[in-house]
Length: 296
Ligand code: MN
Ligand code: MN
Image 1 (cartoon, rainbow, N blue to C red):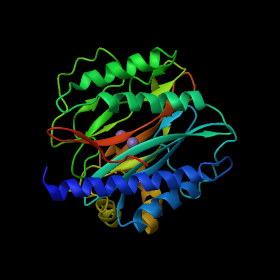
Image 2 (cartoon, rainbow, N blue to C red; image 1 turned 135 degrees about the vertical axis):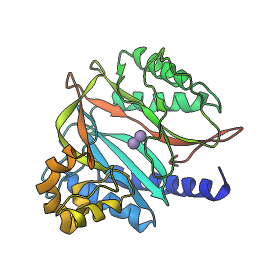
Image 3 (spheres, rainbow, N blue to C red; image 1 turned 180 degrees about the vertical axis):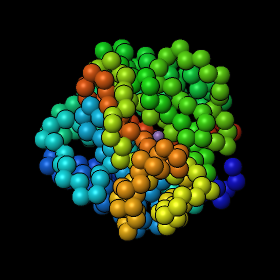
């Protein structure tokens, strides 16, 4: 990785860390999710970067992938846990980070376990370490405390304008993949923990989408497709479409069936137990690991 690219990853990480601090201040009971999303996303733009995906505000048994919809009236509940997962990019070089916050003083043990699991991974991670070792650390740390990791959510490699660039990082033990952490590459490490079975399912609802086919033409949808190109293949939410929002809502079933867009369904823990998550982005160098999203 050349210095210029590394600088962009570091810059994205720094802004992501500041944005997370801002998000944490906004995570109070009865706060509108739409307000949190708009304020944090705007903060990222004002810092001179772009959102790599819509701000995820996932409450209690919702493990991931909820962002506020247009006119969203949902508020944070009085009690429980909220996961903020945010993405920042500088010229396509991404920082992906998540933190869980207590609502009404609840779930502090669960949140601490997610944080501690991530700390344990980062304390032992090294260049060329086998990726399945990360899963072993998660499994041991989490089950020894009487909890379960969410086994079907994983970390991932990152590349230019690509949030999931091929390598998955398991959150369970005895995985079978043979990849190692490669110098010159970026990865997001993200354990999820719960008292439930640790299996998530796809809800019917999706609030986040990805524009997958940049060349397809669909009559009557030219302007909307042009607009969606602006996200460079990164996830977006209908809130970001402005004047094109109504056209999107009208055409959503067609666009999904034509495979012009993919939906990211809201992910829910199957036993409806609360879930906590912690996530940092790392750069792997020849001799060391850099945590780009580290907060002070
Ligand atoms: Mn994330
Ligand atoms: Mn991630």
